[in-house]
Image 1: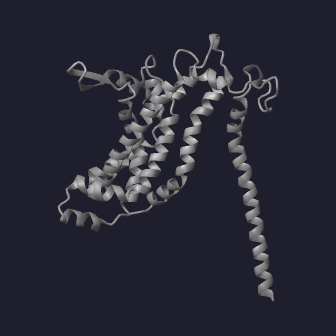
Image 2: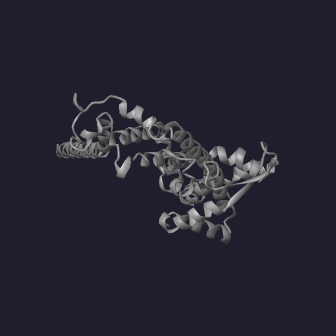
Length: 305
């Protein structure tokens, strides 16, 4: 009888604690979502009512429908969809470059495990804690001065392009995103059995073929996890493209939103919030569809070797 009473009291206490945690996290979730809801509400208001009625729902006087969205897509001399295109190019190319290069580097570092490899790994880990502000001025100068030669089929001659274009800025993103990616990939590679790679070598596979046909498919959980994190970072990044890109030709979405200013620094808040909402919708959808892979990848990368 005493055992039953004790078990029932433990069950009641456990149920109460679960209810309390549910309510607590629900309140925290509402607090996190509130800024997005505020941006959504104000994107349908006239600019004059946003400062005075920030948290109020749109009324007949303040409601303007989709006018802010239409105005934002044609605001200024730079089309919104052009900025979307450049943001997409930078995000896709940078993420692909980071995933391929860092996964190969992490595999090499883990399998060779020499003093030099350990030093490179420590440098990658250290790069995660170095503030971006320490290198941003040097980076901006380097992006303008360094040029990459390439053969132009249009002019049929050898030309050069700087690092200040959407097609070359992924090289800079590789440097800043390599630290976290190598750290996560290395943790996962340590959990992979070496015997599979040895069997591939016996069958005649070289290092590159072993990596792309054997190792890379097994890295899928971490590839998706790192890819999602890098995409969310690069898509929303403002400072690095602002410092590096030639803004007379190329703008990303965050830069274009920052440029939504009138004379004397006046800002059309309705248009700004409409563009902010348009810019975060794709990344929210992408994150919601891939969030389970993030958890799997982080858990897999936490394996100690």
